[in-house]
Length: 373
Image (tube, rainbow, N blue to C red):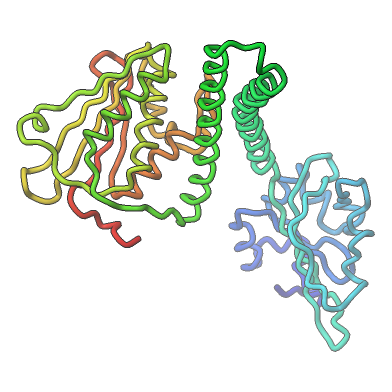
Protein backbone atom coordinates (compact mmCIF):
# COMPACT_ATOMS: atom_id res chain seq x y z
CA UNK A 1 0.00 0.00 0.00
CA UNK A 2 1.26 3.46 -0.80
CA UNK A 3 0.04 6.94 -0.02
CA UNK A 4 0.57 10.48 -1.20
CA UNK A 5 1.59 11.65 2.23
CA UNK A 6 4.51 9.24 2.49
CA UNK A 7 3.26 7.44 5.57
CA UNK A 8 3.12 4.12 3.77
CA UNK A 9 -0.57 3.65 4.57
CA UNK A 10 -3.77 4.38 2.76
CA UNK A 11 -4.84 7.99 3.37
CA UNK A 12 -8.38 8.97 4.25
CA UNK A 13 -10.73 9.10 1.29
CA UNK A 14 -8.63 6.74 -0.86
CA UNK A 15 -11.56 4.49 -1.76
CA UNK A 16 -10.62 4.78 -5.43
CA UNK A 17 -7.18 3.30 -4.72
CA UNK A 18 -7.00 -0.21 -6.29
CA UNK A 19 -5.64 -1.60 -3.03
CA UNK A 20 -8.58 -0.13 -1.15
CA UNK A 21 -10.97 -1.67 -3.65
CA UNK A 22 -9.43 -5.08 -3.02
CA UNK A 23 -9.62 -4.50 0.74
CA UNK A 24 -13.37 -3.94 0.40
CA UNK A 25 -13.69 -7.45 -1.05
CA UNK A 26 -12.13 -9.10 1.99
CA UNK A 27 -14.48 -11.18 4.17
CA UNK A 28 -12.80 -9.80 7.33
CA UNK A 29 -12.50 -6.29 8.66
CA UNK A 30 -9.27 -4.44 7.81
CA UNK A 31 -7.88 -1.39 9.62
CA UNK A 32 -4.55 0.24 8.67
CA UNK A 33 -2.66 2.45 11.11
CA UNK A 34 0.26 4.62 9.98
CA UNK A 35 3.54 5.49 11.65
CA UNK A 36 1.86 8.60 13.07
CA UNK A 37 -0.37 6.21 15.06
CA UNK A 38 -3.47 7.43 13.28
CA UNK A 39 -6.02 5.29 11.52
CA UNK A 40 -5.60 5.74 7.77
CA UNK A 41 -8.05 3.19 6.41
CA UNK A 42 -10.94 0.97 7.47
CA UNK A 43 -12.93 -1.19 5.08
CA UNK A 44 -16.70 -1.56 5.18
CA UNK A 45 -16.58 -4.89 7.06
CA UNK A 46 -14.49 -3.29 9.83
CA UNK A 47 -17.04 -0.48 10.14
CA UNK A 48 -19.85 -3.04 10.34
CA UNK A 49 -18.11 -5.09 13.02
CA UNK A 50 -17.29 -1.98 15.07
CA UNK A 51 -20.77 -0.52 14.45
CA UNK A 52 -19.52 2.93 13.46
CA UNK A 53 -18.95 5.07 10.37
CA UNK A 54 -15.65 6.09 8.76
CA UNK A 55 -15.59 9.50 10.45
CA UNK A 56 -15.37 7.82 13.85
CA UNK A 57 -12.18 6.02 12.84
CA UNK A 58 -10.27 7.41 9.88
CA UNK A 59 -7.94 10.25 10.80
CA UNK A 60 -8.14 9.64 14.52
CA UNK A 61 -5.40 8.25 16.73
CA UNK A 62 -5.50 4.52 17.40
CA UNK A 63 -6.03 5.01 21.12
CA UNK A 64 -8.86 7.48 20.51
CA UNK A 65 -10.62 5.92 17.51
CA UNK A 66 -10.21 2.24 18.39
CA UNK A 67 -9.72 1.84 22.15
CA UNK A 68 -9.67 -1.93 22.69
CA UNK A 69 -9.50 -3.68 26.06
CA UNK A 70 -8.71 -7.27 26.95
CA UNK A 71 -10.78 -9.53 29.21
CA UNK A 72 -9.06 -8.02 32.24
CA UNK A 73 -10.12 -4.48 31.27
CA UNK A 74 -6.58 -3.40 30.33
CA UNK A 75 -5.96 -0.90 27.56
CA UNK A 76 -4.81 -3.22 24.77
CA UNK A 77 -2.62 -0.67 22.97
CA UNK A 78 -0.87 0.37 26.19
CA UNK A 79 -0.38 -3.33 26.96
CA UNK A 80 1.02 -4.34 23.56
CA UNK A 81 2.55 -0.98 22.47
CA UNK A 82 3.32 -1.87 18.82
CA UNK A 83 5.85 0.98 18.39
CA UNK A 84 8.08 -0.06 21.27
CA UNK A 85 9.36 -3.33 22.63
CA UNK A 86 11.39 -5.94 20.80
CA UNK A 87 12.03 -5.08 17.13
CA UNK A 88 11.52 -8.74 16.21
CA UNK A 89 7.84 -8.73 17.14
CA UNK A 90 5.77 -9.37 14.00
CA UNK A 91 2.45 -8.54 15.66
CA UNK A 92 0.06 -10.63 17.71
CA UNK A 93 -2.09 -13.63 17.05
CA UNK A 94 -5.86 -13.52 17.13
CA UNK A 95 -7.16 -12.21 20.44
CA UNK A 96 -10.68 -11.83 21.75
CA UNK A 97 -10.95 -8.15 22.69
CA UNK A 98 -13.70 -5.72 23.65
CA UNK A 99 -14.49 -2.98 21.12
CA UNK A 100 -15.55 0.59 22.03
CA UNK A 101 -19.28 -0.24 21.94
CA UNK A 102 -18.81 -3.26 24.21
CA UNK A 103 -18.99 -5.99 21.56
CA UNK A 104 -16.49 -8.82 21.45
CA UNK A 105 -14.15 -8.73 18.45
CA UNK A 106 -11.42 -11.10 17.29
CA UNK A 107 -8.36 -8.99 16.45
CA UNK A 108 -5.14 -9.97 14.68
CA UNK A 109 -2.27 -7.48 14.26
CA UNK A 110 0.64 -7.38 11.84
CA UNK A 111 3.52 -4.93 12.36
CA UNK A 112 5.19 -3.81 9.13
CA UNK A 113 8.72 -2.54 9.79
CA UNK A 114 11.38 -0.76 7.77
CA UNK A 115 14.95 0.55 8.11
CA UNK A 116 17.89 -0.79 10.04
CA UNK A 117 16.16 -0.01 13.32
CA UNK A 118 13.04 -1.92 12.27
CA UNK A 119 10.72 1.00 12.89
CA UNK A 120 7.04 0.18 12.75
CA UNK A 121 5.68 1.96 9.67
CA UNK A 122 2.24 0.41 9.68
CA UNK A 123 0.04 -1.68 11.90
CA UNK A 124 -2.45 -3.77 9.93
CA UNK A 125 -5.38 -5.05 11.95
CA UNK A 126 -7.66 -7.91 10.93
CA UNK A 127 -11.08 -7.93 12.62
CA UNK A 128 -13.59 -10.74 12.80
CA UNK A 129 -17.01 -10.87 14.38
CA UNK A 130 -16.83 -13.07 17.48
CA UNK A 131 -20.54 -13.96 17.46
CA UNK A 132 -20.17 -17.16 15.43
CA UNK A 133 -17.27 -18.35 17.57
CA UNK A 134 -19.14 -17.63 20.77
CA UNK A 135 -22.21 -19.44 19.45
CA UNK A 136 -20.04 -22.45 18.62
CA UNK A 137 -18.51 -22.31 22.11
CA UNK A 138 -21.97 -22.22 23.68
CA UNK A 139 -23.02 -25.19 21.58
CA UNK A 140 -19.86 -27.03 22.58
CA UNK A 141 -20.49 -26.27 26.25
CA UNK A 142 -24.03 -27.62 25.87
CA UNK A 143 -22.71 -30.79 24.27
CA UNK A 144 -20.11 -31.26 27.01
CA UNK A 145 -22.85 -30.80 29.61
CA UNK A 146 -25.01 -33.44 27.89
CA UNK A 147 -22.10 -35.88 27.60
CA UNK A 148 -21.18 -35.29 31.25
CA UNK A 149 -24.77 -36.04 32.24
CA UNK A 150 -24.77 -39.22 30.15
CA UNK A 151 -21.55 -40.34 31.84
CA UNK A 152 -22.66 -39.37 35.32
CA UNK A 153 -26.00 -41.20 35.34
CA UNK A 154 -24.65 -44.77 34.91
CA UNK A 155 -21.56 -43.95 36.96
CA UNK A 156 -23.77 -42.86 39.88
CA UNK A 157 -25.65 -46.15 39.62
CA UNK A 158 -22.42 -48.19 39.54
CA UNK A 159 -20.88 -46.43 42.54
CA UNK A 160 -24.16 -46.55 44.48
CA UNK A 161 -24.72 -50.28 44.02
CA UNK A 162 -21.08 -51.23 44.61
CA UNK A 163 -21.03 -49.15 47.79
CA UNK A 164 -24.21 -50.82 49.03
CA UNK A 165 -22.91 -54.30 48.25
CA UNK A 166 -19.58 -53.69 49.97
CA UNK A 167 -21.12 -52.26 53.13
CA UNK A 168 -24.30 -54.35 53.45
CA UNK A 169 -23.48 -57.58 51.65
CA UNK A 170 -25.05 -59.81 54.32
CA UNK A 171 -28.32 -57.87 54.30
CA UNK A 172 -29.19 -58.64 50.67
CA UNK A 173 -30.67 -61.85 49.36
CA UNK A 174 -29.00 -63.69 46.49
CA UNK A 175 -31.72 -62.48 44.13
CA UNK A 176 -31.16 -58.86 45.18
CA UNK A 177 -27.41 -59.21 44.77
CA UNK A 178 -27.83 -60.66 41.30
CA UNK A 179 -30.14 -57.83 40.25
CA UNK A 180 -27.70 -55.21 41.54
CA UNK A 181 -24.71 -56.84 39.82
CA UNK A 182 -26.65 -57.10 36.55
CA UNK A 183 -27.48 -53.40 36.82
CA UNK A 184 -23.82 -52.59 37.44
CA UNK A 185 -22.83 -54.62 34.39
CA UNK A 186 -25.46 -52.92 32.23
CA UNK A 187 -24.42 -49.41 33.30
CA UNK A 188 -20.73 -50.22 32.90
CA UNK A 189 -21.46 -51.41 29.35
CA UNK A 190 -23.33 -48.18 28.69
CA UNK A 191 -20.35 -46.17 29.92
CA UNK A 192 -17.96 -48.17 27.74
CA UNK A 193 -20.20 -47.64 24.71
CA UNK A 194 -20.36 -43.87 25.20
CA UNK A 195 -16.60 -43.58 25.68
CA UNK A 196 -16.06 -45.72 22.58
CA UNK A 197 -18.28 -43.40 20.56
CA UNK A 198 -16.36 -40.34 21.76
CA UNK A 199 -13.07 -41.99 20.77
CA UNK A 200 -14.53 -43.01 17.41
CA UNK A 201 -15.55 -39.43 16.71
CA UNK A 202 -11.96 -38.34 17.30
CA UNK A 203 -10.66 -41.09 15.00
CA UNK A 204 -13.22 -40.34 12.29
CA UNK A 205 -12.45 -36.62 12.35
CA UNK A 206 -8.70 -37.29 12.10
CA UNK A 207 -9.03 -40.07 9.50
CA UNK A 208 -7.24 -42.47 11.84
CA UNK A 209 -9.95 -45.13 12.19
CA UNK A 210 -8.63 -48.64 11.57
CA UNK A 211 -10.91 -51.54 10.65
CA UNK A 212 -10.17 -55.16 11.53
CA UNK A 213 -11.61 -56.87 8.48
CA UNK A 214 -12.67 -60.47 8.23
CA UNK A 215 -15.46 -62.63 6.78
CA UNK A 216 -18.79 -61.85 8.42
CA UNK A 217 -22.06 -63.78 8.56
CA UNK A 218 -24.29 -60.75 8.95
CA UNK A 219 -27.47 -62.80 9.45
CA UNK A 220 -25.93 -64.70 12.37
CA UNK A 221 -24.50 -61.49 13.80
CA UNK A 222 -27.85 -59.69 13.69
CA UNK A 223 -29.70 -62.73 15.06
CA UNK A 224 -27.38 -62.91 18.06
CA UNK A 225 -27.54 -59.17 18.49
CA UNK A 226 -31.35 -59.02 18.39
CA UNK A 227 -31.71 -61.93 20.85
CA UNK A 228 -29.23 -60.30 23.22
CA UNK A 229 -31.06 -57.01 22.87
CA UNK A 230 -34.44 -58.60 23.60
CA UNK A 231 -33.10 -60.29 26.73
CA UNK A 232 -31.54 -57.08 28.00
CA UNK A 233 -34.61 -54.83 27.68
CA UNK A 234 -37.86 -54.81 29.61
CA UNK A 235 -39.69 -52.65 27.03
CA UNK A 236 -39.78 -52.57 23.25
CA UNK A 237 -39.46 -55.40 20.74
CA UNK A 238 -37.04 -56.03 17.89
CA UNK A 239 -37.94 -58.31 14.98
CA UNK A 240 -35.44 -59.62 12.41
CA UNK A 241 -36.62 -60.54 8.92
CA UNK A 242 -35.01 -61.77 5.71
CA UNK A 243 -35.94 -59.98 2.50
CA UNK A 244 -37.22 -61.89 -0.51
CA UNK A 245 -33.95 -62.06 -2.42
CA UNK A 246 -32.04 -63.15 0.68
CA UNK A 247 -34.58 -65.93 1.34
CA UNK A 248 -34.40 -67.15 -2.25
CA UNK A 249 -30.68 -66.84 -2.93
CA UNK A 250 -28.97 -66.40 0.44
CA UNK A 251 -26.55 -63.59 1.22
CA UNK A 252 -23.27 -62.83 -0.58
CA UNK A 253 -19.98 -63.08 1.25
CA UNK A 254 -18.86 -59.88 2.88
CA UNK A 255 -15.78 -58.69 4.74
CA UNK A 256 -16.11 -56.21 7.56
CA UNK A 257 -15.15 -55.33 11.11
CA UNK A 258 -17.53 -57.37 13.29
CA UNK A 259 -17.27 -55.07 16.32
CA UNK A 260 -17.98 -52.00 14.19
CA UNK A 261 -21.00 -53.66 12.58
CA UNK A 262 -22.41 -54.46 16.00
CA UNK A 263 -21.88 -50.83 16.95
CA UNK A 264 -23.66 -49.61 13.80
CA UNK A 265 -26.76 -51.73 14.27
CA UNK A 266 -26.91 -51.31 18.04
CA UNK A 267 -27.05 -47.53 17.52
CA UNK A 268 -29.73 -47.80 14.83
CA UNK A 269 -31.90 -50.18 16.88
CA UNK A 270 -31.42 -48.11 20.02
CA UNK A 271 -32.37 -44.99 18.07
CA UNK A 272 -35.53 -46.71 16.76
CA UNK A 273 -36.61 -47.83 20.23
CA UNK A 274 -35.85 -44.42 21.74
CA UNK A 275 -37.75 -42.37 19.16
CA UNK A 276 -40.24 -44.95 17.90
CA UNK A 277 -43.35 -46.51 19.40
CA UNK A 278 -41.83 -49.62 20.97
CA UNK A 279 -41.22 -51.92 17.98
CA UNK A 280 -38.27 -51.98 15.58
CA UNK A 281 -38.15 -54.20 12.48
CA UNK A 282 -34.76 -55.13 11.02
CA UNK A 283 -34.81 -56.46 7.44
CA UNK A 284 -31.74 -58.08 5.88
CA UNK A 285 -31.51 -58.47 2.11
CA UNK A 286 -29.17 -58.31 -0.88
CA UNK A 287 -29.01 -55.88 -3.79
CA UNK A 288 -27.39 -55.92 -7.21
CA UNK A 289 -27.19 -58.56 -9.91
CA UNK A 290 -26.55 -62.05 -8.54
CA UNK A 291 -22.87 -62.91 -8.72
CA UNK A 292 -21.98 -59.61 -10.37
CA UNK A 293 -20.06 -56.76 -8.80
CA UNK A 294 -20.91 -54.41 -7.30
CA UNK A 295 -23.26 -56.42 -5.13
CA UNK A 296 -24.25 -55.30 -1.66
CA UNK A 297 -25.91 -56.39 1.54
CA UNK A 298 -28.76 -54.11 2.62
CA UNK A 299 -30.08 -53.74 6.17
CA UNK A 300 -33.22 -51.72 6.87
CA UNK A 301 -34.01 -50.63 10.42
CA UNK A 302 -37.58 -49.32 10.68
CA UNK A 303 -39.47 -47.97 13.68
CA UNK A 304 -43.11 -47.07 14.24
CA UNK A 305 -42.61 -43.55 15.52
CA UNK A 306 -43.45 -40.18 14.00
CA UNK A 307 -40.70 -40.32 11.38
CA UNK A 308 -38.13 -37.67 10.51
CA UNK A 309 -39.07 -34.51 8.55
CA UNK A 310 -37.32 -34.32 5.14
CA UNK A 311 -35.65 -31.05 6.21
CA UNK A 312 -33.89 -32.86 9.08
CA UNK A 313 -32.85 -36.06 7.32
CA UNK A 314 -29.34 -34.86 6.56
CA UNK A 315 -28.93 -32.98 9.85
CA UNK A 316 -29.50 -36.08 11.97
CA UNK A 317 -26.14 -37.50 10.85
CA UNK A 318 -24.33 -34.38 12.05
CA UNK A 319 -22.06 -34.48 15.05
CA UNK A 320 -23.93 -33.89 18.34
CA UNK A 321 -27.26 -33.22 16.59
CA UNK A 322 -30.07 -34.48 18.80
CA UNK A 323 -33.17 -32.59 17.63
CA UNK A 324 -35.63 -30.66 19.79
CA UNK A 325 -36.15 -33.51 22.27
CA UNK A 326 -32.56 -33.35 23.53
CA UNK A 327 -33.05 -36.98 24.54
CA UNK A 328 -29.57 -38.16 23.59
CA UNK A 329 -26.01 -36.96 23.10
CA UNK A 330 -26.37 -36.87 19.32
CA UNK A 331 -23.32 -39.10 18.90
CA UNK A 332 -24.90 -42.32 17.63
CA UNK A 333 -25.95 -41.46 14.08
CA UNK A 334 -22.79 -39.46 13.40
CA UNK A 335 -20.76 -42.54 14.33
CA UNK A 336 -23.08 -44.79 12.29
CA UNK A 337 -22.48 -42.82 9.09
CA UNK A 338 -18.74 -42.62 9.73
CA UNK A 339 -18.40 -46.37 10.33
CA UNK A 340 -20.62 -47.30 7.37
CA UNK A 341 -18.67 -45.05 5.01
CA UNK A 342 -15.38 -46.42 6.40
CA UNK A 343 -16.58 -49.81 5.14
CA UNK A 344 -17.25 -48.31 1.72
CA UNK A 345 -21.01 -48.32 2.26
CA UNK A 346 -23.79 -45.76 2.55
CA UNK A 347 -26.67 -44.96 4.90
CA UNK A 348 -29.77 -42.84 4.39
CA UNK A 349 -33.17 -42.37 6.00
CA UNK A 350 -36.64 -42.34 4.47
CA UNK A 351 -40.28 -42.87 5.47
CA UNK A 352 -41.19 -46.35 6.69
CA UNK A 353 -44.35 -48.24 5.71
CA UNK A 354 -45.87 -47.52 9.13
CA UNK A 355 -45.04 -43.82 8.97
CA UNK A 356 -41.91 -44.04 11.13
CA UNK A 357 -38.29 -43.69 10.10
CA UNK A 358 -36.52 -46.26 7.94
CA UNK A 359 -32.72 -46.30 7.99
CA UNK A 360 -31.19 -48.12 5.05
CA UNK A 361 -27.59 -49.32 5.30
CA UNK A 362 -25.90 -50.69 2.17
CA UNK A 363 -22.56 -52.49 2.63
CA UNK A 364 -20.44 -53.80 -0.24
CA UNK A 365 -20.18 -57.58 -0.63
CA UNK A 366 -17.00 -59.47 -1.41
CA UNK A 367 -13.56 -58.03 -0.70
CA UNK A 368 -14.04 -54.30 -0.04
CA UNK A 369 -11.79 -51.56 -1.30
CA UNK A 370 -10.79 -50.72 2.29
CA UNK A 371 -8.79 -53.94 2.73
CA UNK A 372 -5.35 -53.01 4.02
CA UNK A 373 -6.39 -49.63 5.38
